[in-house]
View 1 (cartoon, protein in one colour):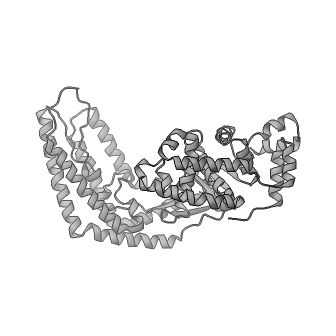
View 2 (tube, protein in one colour):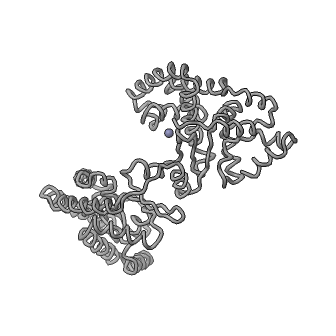
View 3 (cartoon, helix red, strand yellow):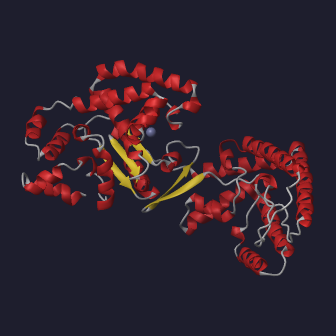
Amino acid sequence: MTAMATGVALTGLSGAALMHAQEPALLQADRDLTPHQHQLASQELQAFGQPTVRWLEQRGVTIQITDSDAEVGRMLEEYGILHGLDRLEVARRAVEVGAALDRAVSSPEQLERLQTMERLQSEAIELQRQWAEENGLPAVMPMGFGMGGGMIGMLGSQPTRALTPRPARQDEVMKELMSVSQASAQSFKQAAGDWGEQVGFLFSVQSALEQSGASSQADQADFRALLQAANGERLARAQAEGFALVESQVALLPEGPAREAASAHLADLQAHPDKIPLNGLKHGLVAPPVRYLSLGERTVVLSATDSSGFRDIQAKGLHFPAKDAIQVDADQLGHIRVLSHEVGHAIEDQLRESAPDFYRDFQPRLRAAFAKAHQNPTEAASGYGLTDPAEYLAEGVRLQFESPELLSQRDPALAGLTRELLERAETRPVKSPMLDALMLLGGVGLIGAACWLRRTPRPPT
Ligand SMILES: [Zn+2]
């Protein structure tokens, strides 16, 4: 909160200033921090201990709590990290991916897979029908559009009573279906290349639009054009089939509330074709992996394959080493220790610079521990920590506060390294004669840190 920070500077050594001075200046760069966010973030920072917090403050580290992707976007933009995509380039790629998927969908291998899937689905339906009849159950839904059409269900509530066990063959059929659909998804992923992550999941045009973040009419039209370029005829076919499937399900239902609900759903789909569920696995549909981000006047289009943009926006917290800045999503405060993880990055980064001797000795031991943790990934203290040594250490810092017992038990080497790092951050504050003098005054420590920062801007690392 800026108002409070200014209060400290203006009132000098009053009692209120002394009290406020105990609160982390790290958060003062956040101009729209709410009191609640302030409280949660301060609590998490306090766990590091006052000396570490002060050490980070002195080194000019700042933390911003963000409420939306757009706010993260503005931060990335301010730091010169956010680059928009060339829309023409994206459109060109959409056409390329579309053509590759057209070929994959009509390849002999894929046609054979489809036949197999249809055969297995019919068999599963028949098995289900027989079983339902044996047990005097009424409506049987045809196969859905889930993983290889694995969804067989019954609408309407059934009285609870003992049913005969389902035939074992039914499990076998489902397993075979699963394996054929996986092979199908794999071939689409290969064809779609860097857009492959989006292939095969269950979606509707509406859900794809929502995921794209396109909010203005112009952006929505832009995204629709990309969807059209990438999916073409396949999209229309999938839509017709999806609708017909829901229609046939409604027809199978006996009169009653379940059928009424299903009919209402059908009418809704008729009025809003964007909502029709589509079978991406059968038709090789792809949602362009782009994301629209409104930054006030300007919309930025990011791509999942552009590591400088989309992925950063998806993160829950970020550390910007060159800017000594940390970003944490507001909804991560208080439960998952994203803030501690990012502070862990900041401490490593600051020590690398301020204590090169310490770091020279520390880094090889960190790398060795990381390599060892990698040998036994299932036993790792944190799966995400296996990404690289920096994440390994940041996860160690997080776990040091979240579950120190688990950390010591699973990875004693990391537990030791983390403690060493934190101790070092506490015991070696930045040397600045002016700052030391101001620190003696205690309550004006924050002003001291601010002055020092203004006088000696830090170079990017
Ligand atoms: Zn990290």
